[in-house]
Length: 120
Image 1 (cartoon, rainbow, N blue to C red):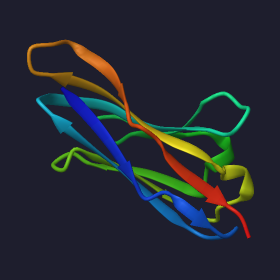
Image 2 (image 1 turned 90 degrees about the horizontal axis):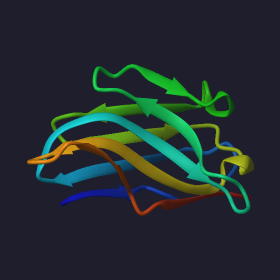
Image 3 (image 1 turned 90 degrees about the vertical axis):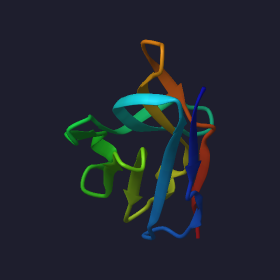
């Protein structure tokens, strides 16, 4: 089995910062793309940022210049540093990863989600 466990969400004032973490565990052979998605109330889930196995990144236009995705392959962890947060960033943030586990082809895995609320 593979698990993705997120942490780091919470309540922050506009202009503030948060750092999300997502750690993968289980019988993992390789981790390919890792990404953060978010879903605000009444809206579809959207891609926030993605990082591949050689740390090439891409971002949603709405977060470029404010958010930074990174990964630590030794720790099987992906991070999302969020700066200059805006109320529009309020959402549940989900970790996603393309993982190959022992004895199986690669598959998509999701974390349980962590709430980020930006409000004064």
